[in-house]
Image 1 (spheres, rainbow, N blue to C red):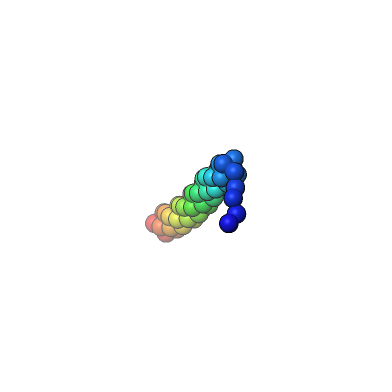
Image 2 (image 1 turned 120 degrees about the horizontal axis):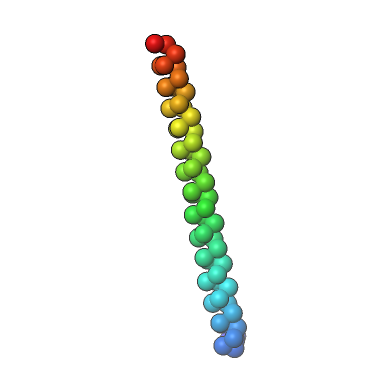
Length: 57
């Protein structure tokens, strides 16, 4: 059986915790960026449709 000191367990726990938080935050940032991009695209399409309808009147 492999034995490890308490400091090894502590170090491993800290690595898992902070790497996990980093992955979670990066995932949220990617999700937000995708949402912002989609919203901007919808806004552009809406503005284009308003200009077309205003131009045809």
